[in-house]
Length: 396
Image (cartoon, rainbow, N blue to C red; front, side, top):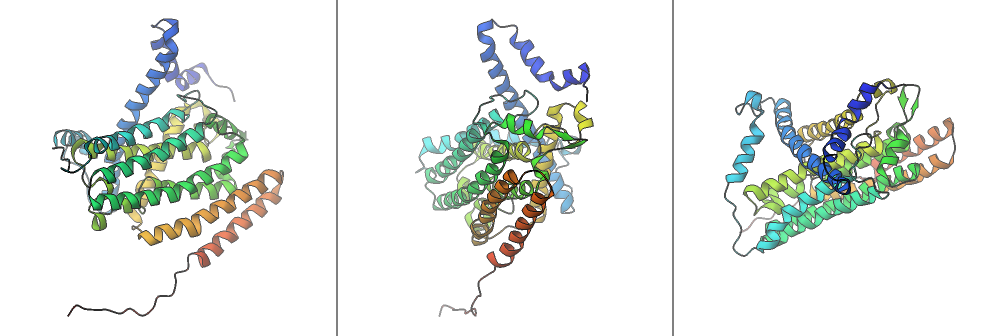
């Protein structure tokens, strides 16, 4: 399919704008200017998306729960994020007397900086990766793991047992599901043969007629994408895996002793992590910035990337409004008795898919293995143990 000069210009508009701005500088500074302008774009775009998403989420949840949601500040409540930001800025910053003030201050900053670093390797459009490194996927997971350090810093530095307990529960949850997150991504690496995210997108940016070769349209890809989605939900502490912030059990989790702008940074970091992990999922399984139909390639690539990311965000919101919170034992059993074994089996199925060659036989074999494992593990692997007769004891 041929592309018109106008469509090429629209697709590369941000690259052309960056090069135009950098052209005003001496030649020796242009490379650094390109990086700085890319950083400025990331720091500007994603917090703005965060502000819009909070309104979208609160209105969406209100609709699901038969209420209005934000509707007072600005037209249709669109200025609510501005009011919330002003409130966070002027609210008193309370620090416990016995807290480690330095670590207490650095914890939310560490979280936000680590999440912003994840965006550096995501290809958000054609030629729109800030840093196109060969080990981009490894870098993303390295930065993602850094967020667990900030959670521990917040809980430990507060000198509050509720905060420390919340941090330990959060870290146990994040480590458990981060194993699944990494293993589900290995399936893609096995097929693409690279840790380079731009190459992973390029491998999927191929078409049979009008239909793309996205990895999610294969048996192993569907399984890996589902396990990735479950792990991503737990990794970002979203419902039904939002136990680290369970107010009924832990006051407010690891950020119990935070207020004002520091608490807002934790809130910002959680949503930015949701954007980043959705962007990686789009890159790995949904073709990244490639169009869903070949005839739709006239639409700029960056439009498709952000449209897919916002679709993932909608799914996060939908799940939050419909699925109740799990218990801690249910969450950990689900991770270690179902999600992790199923992900390991999917790696074997991916290897079969890779070496069985073309044809319908691999479709049938891989689908049957995964379907049988899903049924058997769901029926027997998560069977609840028989509970004895309940007995009640009363103080006398």
